Image 1 (tube, rainbow, N blue to C red):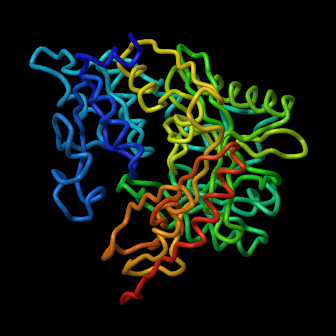
Image 2 (image 1 turned 60 degrees about the vertical axis):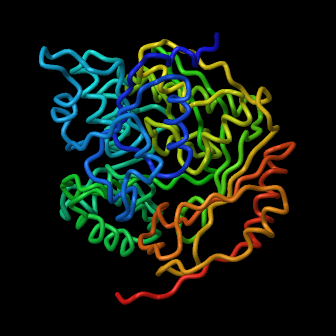
Image 3 (image 1 turned 180 degrees about the horizontal axis):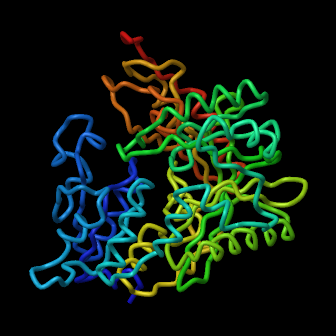
Length: 426
């Protein structure tokens, strides 16, 4: 009997979802093993763009419940019977904007939880900085709550610096500032953001962080009973102007001493916030002075990184995380070399200009190189409306004998694909 057969007869509530196929297929793989899945959503537009949810992969679950998913009490209400007992065996979310409410609901229901304070610290990045304190993996930082605090914050953090909303995701609002004037402009822009991308109220605070020079990577892990198990590190390639993630490959081969320092850094960070269980996608900057934590995401990664982990390590993080949410105590044993691929890579497809997505050329030519192409937009959609990771149209995914070979293949294929857009009225 495999660990995944433990899904049989269990009922899992999933609160909202991240976009893209990996998260949808993760739900349906659990259903393949006999798990009954309830999906809680506030609205359908976020996923369907106006179409019926019944025709969307997320709509093909056992039950869809419409509820205010920002309110943990509302989540608890729909998941309890008349006697106040939970109707499900577990509840989880991989949506950055709902992990906190979900953790609080899980604790109220007496179900397994990542730990409310841990999720809160990860989601509100100034709390993570505070929890890290004097740890060498931390950076200089200031939370700016009003314009009068700005000059002191800039002086403390130093230039260049990173300005960001403290409680957002998908790189939304992240700005690199090389001068005081740029930092002031970033403050003016970001302090005006009074709602999250999913509609939650925000006070307009801005987090300033020291710009750590080096190579940014991410670390994929799963924590079980407070002990963190590592799948490996993922390379990250950023656009020089926009700072958006253009490509990834896995596993990243690091010098053993560097990998040990990275593992220790991430382990200390997760312990500092009290992370009990579940997946973490931790972004780390490799600097001349050692690893520095960029941020912690208490969820599975996007951009098909979890697919790379599955293919290379021989375990499925989506299923591993769901087993933990159900209280089954599963310890994943996957590691590089145990899967079907020596290495894997993904290249993110961005349009050259924002507007209406009209058509795409070169997919057949790209596939002849042995890659797969996954699109999450279709003609008629408005694309690249914001400067964040939502601007992508799709992914090119490749296997190789090594991560480097896979990346070369994915990049060569992506170069053959051209995304056409048509300007729309402002």
